[in-house]
Image (tube, rainbow, N blue to C red; front, side):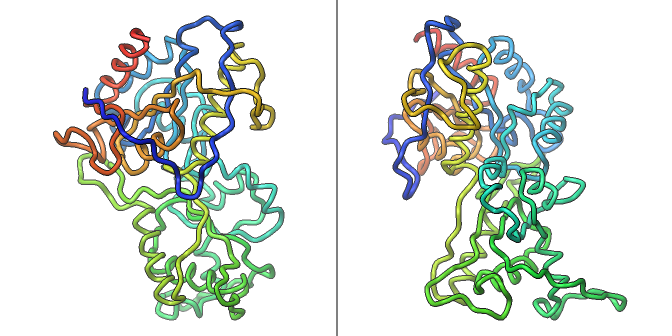
Length: 371
């Protein structure tokens, strides 16, 4: 195990700390109530459809201990229930969907604000209704995929082959209020063109936004530039797509693309994880007050609890945990994006580096025994 001392980083432009809750020693004397675990999935517990050696046993150790834990993944291809079932079938351990936090899950907090406004969405999805179904499952009412929007406006892609029997559907009557990138798109060319076109307008094609304005909001849920998959080298993820989008937007508009960040390493993912951990503690009688509708009491703090974040990706898992507060500790494993014999990542160094998730859980045991 290598341990690295380092300065704590904060998210750009995000200086305020998440609201927290204090563990009540009066109500809960279990040692496990003083620490919790946040698991990444791909590259930590599984490689694509295959379990990583020791993952089942490591997870069962945490469950049998009764320690609060959640799964926080930037994979947004399914909803929480089906992603839990998929993980369950791969590693042969029962997974509670309430512990599953996907990159788009915190968008639940935005659903009411969208109201009936039109929201476009893109991203490969295993949901039966695609990425549209994912957003509607979060409570967002009026959703259309970028592919559907393109079909309604075929002039946006004059070289796309649509077939001799193609008839363009009716155009949406409402202007586009927001675009959500949940996952890597199926058709990068189509989405780069359509999203750039819409972002240059006030939400209505043919109506340019004012100078130095970006009227249509862009939400990006997953910034992973690459991700681990099976036995091949890391694959390009949504972060690579967003990098392309930024370059093209600046090329045509002469200004930087503005977007709202979700998923790791950004703040909403870690705030949501803390709220879920607090809910678990509250149900076990280990906190003074259970969060009400996701809101934590400002008078309480979680700094008495150590949250161990186990991940394989330095730029998302480690950077996010390092910026989430001093009560978070990052553990980097060598079974995914980070691999080889490097002692640590030079740009986003973790608090600890171990070989795999089994070693990570053993490390937690040793640290908590010493504490």
